[in-house]
Length: 296
Ligand code: GRG
Image (cartoon, rainbow, N blue to C red; front, top):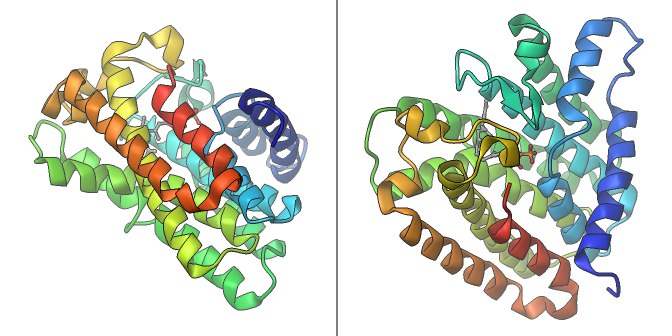
């Protein structure tokens, strides 16, 4: 635990890029255009927050790095699929993502749809092709965890509520429910899957689950604030979309000051969940700091 956070994160991000390059279908393999578009959507961009959370939780649980590489890749592939589909004209209809044209703009809509579908399938293929845990029951439970987190009772369900909420005003609990699913579920899954590659007690897992829930929601509240306050060049995606699309957000509901206060409280609650881990929880603490202080 001697290196500083930024050196720790950069080392894992660069190792992880190689993992992604390996697990994605090579661009010269047929169907080339689909495989090239999958690589376009996943590689060379993104903060890789979810993989970093999986790595930090895996290190806390003394997990084998090869196992964590796979769960981190599966989570990031699901995340990338969700961004590709979210950007399509039938959803958010955006032209810029990670500082470059969105997948359907660079390729075409049908290809973008298939990119999302194929990234999702590949995520689950990885989870069944590699050993992630000492026993098959635990591995099945991990696969189910990611399936639930990304499906209609997780991310996709949250997205359905999001699409339905345009032009409506939601209560704070309704908004929280939407975001805990749309954004929080996958972030929480990243923490839990990283930890489950190693060894943690049920009590420790419950604490990590609470940490994941808090940072997942904080991530979204920060996203709402950045959408209102930051510029397109800094974000690498179109700023001000929430207001333009008349979407309920923490900023529209509470205002920026109260939204920032909420982030502060979630941050404190996340750190509180890590108290019993002592030094072993340091990277997760630093990631909570990064998530609430991020500028893009
Ligand atoms: C299409 C099923 C389906 C779901 C889409 C995640 C999502 C659900 C939509 C993305 C819309 C959005 C901007 C949500 C806010 C939070 C969020 C997930 C931001 C993007 O994640 P980052 O900031 O992106 O981690 P990078 O590019 O850094 O990986």
